[in-house]
Amino acid sequence: MKKSTKLKKYVELFTRNIDRFLAPNVSIKTTIYPVEGPGAIFEFIFNYEGDKSETIAPIKATVGSVLSSIPQRFVAGDIENITFGGTNICMEGNRLLLIKGDDSPPLWSGTTVQEDVLRVVSTSQGGK
Image (cartoon, rainbow, N blue to C red):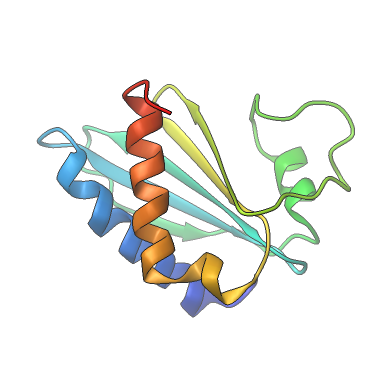
C-alpha cells in the first residue's frame, strides 16, 4: 500500500481509538512504512515526551524489505520475500509494529481499525 492518504487515515483512526486506553500524558510517535506491493508497516512509539509526530518513510518494495531495514525482533533470517496476511502485531517495550499484510479494502476499514486496537490492548494486557 503506497496511498499516503489511506495510510494517514489509518493512523488517525488508530491513534484516536487507542487514546482512550492510554495512561495520562502518553503520546504516540508514528512512522509509516509504505510498500510498492501489498501491505504496509506502522511503527507506533509510546512516549511521555509529548512527541506526536508522524513520518512517512520512503517506499520500499515489500513488507519484508521494510522489516529487513528496521530494527525488530519479530522475524529473523532471510525476510526479503516473506509475505503476511491480515494484521500482525509485534510489541517490544514501548514500541508497537503493526504489519498489514495486504491491500484488501476490508483490512483498511474503520471497523478493522477498531478491531486492531482491541487486539493490541488485549495483547498488552496479557489477553488472547
